[in-house]
Amino acid sequence: MATTKALLVGAGHAHLHLIRRADELAAAGYEIHLLAPRYFDYSGVASAMAVGGLPRGAGRVDVRALAGSTGVNFHEGRLLSLDPVRRIATGADGAQLAYDALSLNIGSVVSPQGMRVHPSVVRVKPLAALMALDARLQESTRSATTVTIVGGGATGIELAAQLATRWGVGRVRLVESGPAIGADLPPGARERVLRVLARRGVAIHTGCLVQEIGERGLVCAHGCEIAHDVAVLATGLSAPPVLEEWGLGDERGVPVRATLQHTHRDEIYAVGDCAQFLPRPLPRLGVHGVRQGPVLHQSLLARIHDRDLPQYTPRRRALSILDLGGGVGLAVRGRWWWYGAGVLRLKRRIDERWLTMYRLR
Ligand SMILES: Cc1cc2nc3c(=O)[nH]c(=O)nc-3n(C[C@H](O)[C@H](O)[C@H](O)COP(=O)(O)OP(=O)(O)OC[C@H]3O[C@@H](n4cnc5c(N)ncnc54)[C@H](O)[C@@H]3O)c2cc1C
Image 1 (cartoon, rainbow, N blue to C red):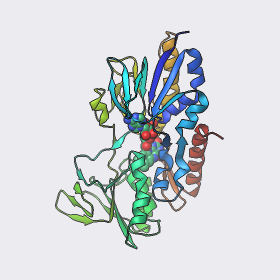
Image 2: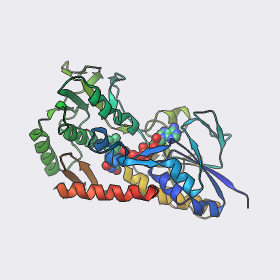
Image 3: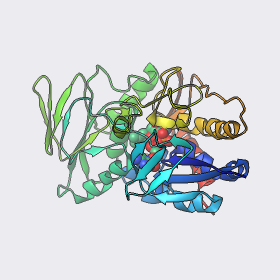
Image 4: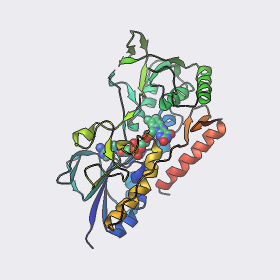
């Protein structure tokens, strides 16, 4: 039987599902190649790992081991360039990989929103960059380090709440350009979070449009300056800039149809944060990557059997749980919310169950 080469780039949530189910793809006639870094870091426990609340390995998946166990040809590294006309991908080590079908699941980066950002500032995405935070805090020579987080969305709130409970952190500031932090939270949940942050001494600066974040301080549009020892950039996520270099999209992502295929190239798929889902805008959340995995898997099978391709239908609401440190969490689904220790226990169970699927025993 002739084989069809499918190249998976990045081992994000959706591709992990495919790697696990690779035997079905191989049986259908695919030769599966994966080009990705060796380890995948899971965002559900990223904040806790970054502030030292959980060990570094708590959210890691050994992608090479998983691929090896399911017969996927693993190429360690990152995609450097792509020739969509000749259908050839080139890895950072110069190795060239030809493909018949290509799928991108390479995640996102933090979007600096036009700010000038010093290289010492810790970025929340890619997660490998966020993992530098713990080391930066340990290196800090001050006994009471001042940390400023720029961006008062879910990630900024999680990090501020957790940092405020960490030993050695003296002052935590959360800086937001809008009129309130947690703008997406239901009003009652926002009030609850504000009470937690106030009790832990987090200083909140709203209406502060940051123009520049330097090594030791930041400057806002109306001239105020705020000093820090360590700054964290948490101003929202955008697709990786390399997509533009590859001619596949822009900061919104690779434009894909409901079938998760590129608008003009049927053989190219994009899933998760690096995709711009054209039927309707999707928030950059792991849950979409997770739910797109089975659709992508079925699509590859349908393609080889010349059947109609399935479509991704996002659910209107998803459960999201913030780890607020100190043993408590905040769960939100639509306008419903719950707070407390039981919520964090539920989050840990959900995260562990998901990670266990991709870890070899
Ligand atoms: C601190 C933090 C906490 C978050 N918590 C949550 C949460 O609790 N729940 C939730 O739903 N969302 C959360 N998010 C959002 C979540 O991180 C993303 O929506 C999710 O990770 C996107 O999944 P993905 O599969 O698209 O990509 P990712 O999970 O980012 O995976 C992409 C993979 O591709 C690899 N890669 C990147 N570039 C290349 C390349 N050029 N070549 C090959 N491989 C490459 C990366 O190393 C990575 O392993 C959080 C985000 C942050 C920053």
